[in-house]
Length: 152
Image (cartoon, rainbow, N blue to C red; front, side):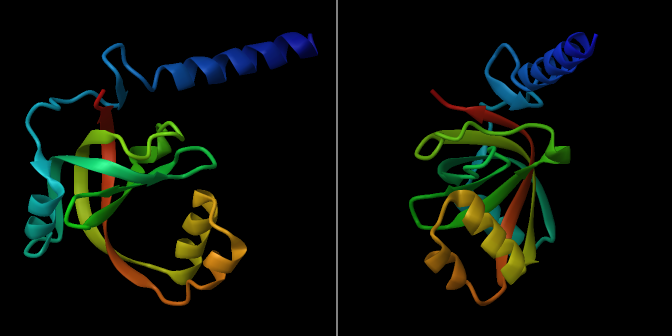
């Protein structure tokens, strides 16, 4: 009976994880990925607004290497935005760096504490030496994605 219950729990977890990706390749919620703005336009909008709802396209620079629970998006001009996923409801593939994505959600500015920055550096797989060099909080652009589409 114990093995049966363990099997049922495993089946439930696998089913919920599989449900994160729709048949058309979206992670999280589906949305119209054809109409989007670039990261440069998004950051220009954030200069005058506290929160910007948008569909944004960018290149993945890095992904949490523990479970894919965050990613960092960059553009050709070096602008970046830190991305988390709504309600911790879905995760990205760990090998996503270098690929283009389109995200639906909202952007905002936030100060990230030293402790949180060090935690993210650890998640990224940086060495303890690199992590210990993080000594100051950082104001950065962030994005809460309700859906992500990975371009092929």
